Amino acid sequence: MTIQNINGTGERLPTGYSSWISFWEDKTGEKAGSGKIGGHVKKTNSTDNAWYIAAITSTQNASTTPYEYSGKLAKLRD
Image (cartoon, rainbow, N blue to C red; front, side):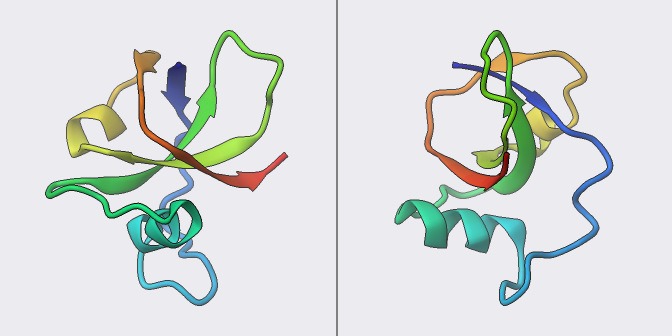
C-alpha cells in the first residue's frame, strides 16, 4: 500500500505508552525491527481517511512524498 506521513503529530505520546513504536507493537502484536520508529501516516489513493501508526525508519519518517509500505498499521482515528 502507499502511505504518506502526517506532519506535526509526534510530540504527543499516546496515553499509557512510552513511545509511538510501543503503541504500534501493542496494537499489532508485532515486534518492530531495529531502527524502527512509530510514524503517523495515512493511506494514499484510498477512500480510507483514518490516521495510523506505522513502523518506519527515520528516513521514511522524514519523507514529504508518498511511499510504499508493506507492514501492519495500528489505527489511531477515523
